[in-house]
Image (tube, rainbow, N blue to C red; front, side, top):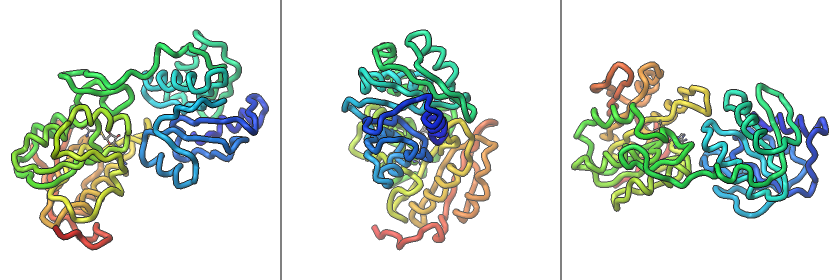
Length: 337
Ligand SMILES: C[S@@+](CC[C@H](N)C(=O)[O-])C[C@H]1O[C@@H](n2cnc3c(N)ncnc32)[C@H](O)[C@@H]1O
């Protein structure tokens, strides 16, 4: 997962990469060791803000959309099949006449994409390592017809794009949250991990709500949100919700926090979101969130809030209202309004 497959292919001499090659890495894992590349002429393309910031802090050139032609493009396989094909199509057009390298875990579908590629191009080489594969081929136009589609309407007119969370339509947990949303919310608030805007759109219908900050780390999802939610009361932020914003400035936070890192369930992400919500809220502020019942958020909620109650959920989802954020979550001085 750390470019170790690529390193192995380079070390064993199976794959050859020039010292002067101009390389784009599309969506590498945050722990990717760029030192394995023989060239320093490297640009990272990333749509996920925490990863974008990480590579930026390392002094690597980073962009959300590479456009300049290069010699080699390395694609780290994402979970979504359509997004994977779309990124490979983009890689082919960026590296026209050069080389495309595709690298991924078995659990992310590397075998299926290799089979798919083999039916369309000559595979110049492949290496299996660390429960995955890396393979490469000369860039042509084999994937052109699979280019990532622009954001487009799916269920009930919601606009999404392959690869974003719940790309086929509203998430059932978020639907449950909207149904159980208390009417008490008023003033300024935030939708943390707002995705393509489902919750924000509904929050605009709550009478007392005056302003919503939608915080989303996935650039593609935020682009869809901009199309789903167009309202002067909404500000869209491409940001990491675990560190975004000033302490103590919000009246409410609503969220359906992420619970996966890639394919791996990761409850610590949701726990970080809860801490962030407590930090962002004013002393009389309220958090309302939804989560799958099995996710272990109770301890973190009790650590961060003086009062926690479950609202009407359903057998699959719990909807939680948390009040009285504890000041220990506010490292800096709370903002006065
Ligand atoms: C469970 S989904 C909910 C999406 C949306 N609120 C909805 O109801 O459909 C969680 C969202 O959090 C986003 N996300 C993951 N990590 C994030 C982070 N560190 N900061 C901001 N958003 C993040 C994901 O991209 C995803 O869109």
